[in-house]
Image (tube, rainbow, N blue to C red; front, side):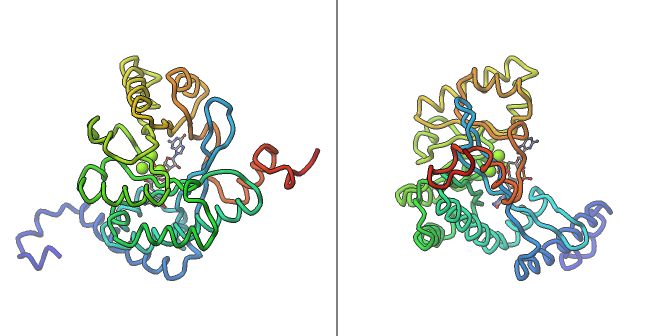
Length: 289
Ligand code: C2E
Ligand code: MG
Ligand code: MG
Ligand code: MG
């Protein structure tokens, strides 16, 4: 690529940079193949817990790519590649189909939980997204309010006008909207008030630091109070310890997600977990006493 722009560009590339680019190009091609043969792709589900009652109120769908030679590749590595290459549109659609099918299966079995799905801004700004999710939900007989769409904060602030329009359409269709990794971007209060978003997900870096640093805990408290005054539900991600859970509960956080409760897991494991908790099932489906 650099060669096309004149031979001199070559010397600006460190060997590490070249390796990085070669890997990106390779992964992009392989991700394209994975989409053609989605047996390499799989959704894991991580429970979301109500901090007051401790019960599972929903799950977040998290994409997993099992690469034929390398094994699991982190979404932190392949999602940005998918976003840059445009593959995210097909990949995101695959995720939507799978997650909504699973939600519909749970609803038929009488499991009353919501499904959170990560949506990239490229997907959000594609004019078909709202119609597509509506059509899929109708096909699967899913109530839109059981579907929560998570959009990362840093991305929301880039193209506000078009993003607000897209979010409003989804909100009007009845879907629940959440801002992911909240606190890492620069949402101002007034902008937040204008967004049709019901849920703020506090980024896991805050959860980690709040334990070590009183000031950081104060910031978390300010986020929670401010969110509540705007009628938002607050969820903390990355809760790993009992102490973190306690602190967040004391600070007034509504919901939590993290390794303390459960790791992201395949659907079979999650089904087992749900079956151990009879309250997630309607009486007619209840197993055991
Ligand atoms: P995210 O949406 O903020 O998801 C939370 C991430 O934190 C997940 O990483 C999850 O496995 C991890 N996590 C959960 N509990 C804990 C904990 O207690 N401690 C720590 N250290 N981590 C925890 P994962 O699955 O690797 O996903 C990373 C990111 O990739 C996601 O961040 C999301 O931005 C993106 N992603 C994953 N699946 C999809 C997808 O289907 N579509 C899109 N557009 N993005 C996705
Ligand atoms: Mg998320
Ligand atoms: Mg997050
Ligand atoms: Mg994220």
